[in-house]
Image (spheres, helix red, strand yellow):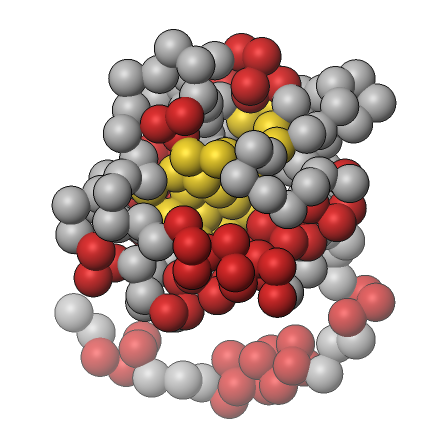
Length: 199
């Protein structure tokens, strides 16, 4: 191997310097189809689910929104995002809340129908919020998770006129026909609803 060929030449240095001062206006434009989506809930990070995992809609025009459904993932935060982004999984939720710090990701726009409840009527009329953790491991239900989720739920309720009560903020286990048990007996509904009321 010729080591001399690896050394920077004066010509290479000058070409690099010239490129460094090229104005951005002269660089090629970004692709027209490349865009970043804005989250419906401003504190959330947009982490889109696969388009194969939800139904495009125009809610609340197409379907009224009258409830929020609380879920627990039975997976880690990262694994849940990967599941929502996998087109073969056929599942999604509007939001995902991380246990450690309450960070919120939005995966499906509120106008669209996420596939989270296992009941089409409930899917069409609800916002689904997943929470990182396991129903039998209450340590995942941190202060940050409860607080950030309650703020999110309150914002959703306010946006669509959903009453902030247990008839309209429900667990996945309360959806008719479900075989799911989340959020489970370790989810502190009294605390959660108090935080929703205070948000």
